[in-house]
Image (tube, rainbow, N blue to C red):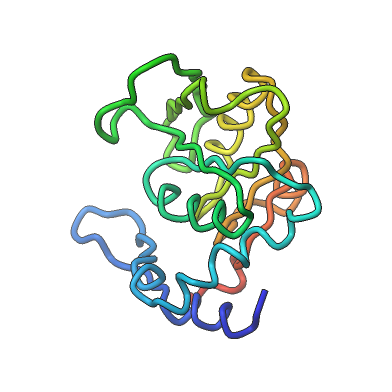
Length: 183
């Protein structure tokens, strides 16, 4: 990854106190989306480690993944498939393949669905997301890929705070990891 992009990602990132009753700070990545230079470089930087795997499609979960996924897909010259969550608005019409994630960092299980007609045998899937902590959603998307006969080639994230052994097992690469983030 270009050093300048790494510097900008850290500079434009922040932790926010959500207020009384909160048990932890919340990440604020909104600066990444506002900065045109960062936005232009994110897609190519995310996909660089996976070019040799020749993905045929990018799959990303709602909500931030719907921004990053198309950036990555465009950089690869492939299509994008959205992984929908029931609580994020209207689900698409038609046949869907569902998977439920293992518990995430809050102990929640997240349901994800992909339109059947957009993912199938022969697809080589690159999963793209902004942040991977427990990899719960990554596992659910990999499960959907397997159910549809597609092959997940790995996951590209802007930030991965999961243990390195988990990242290696699931083929997760990230532009930033825990030591890169401001305290």
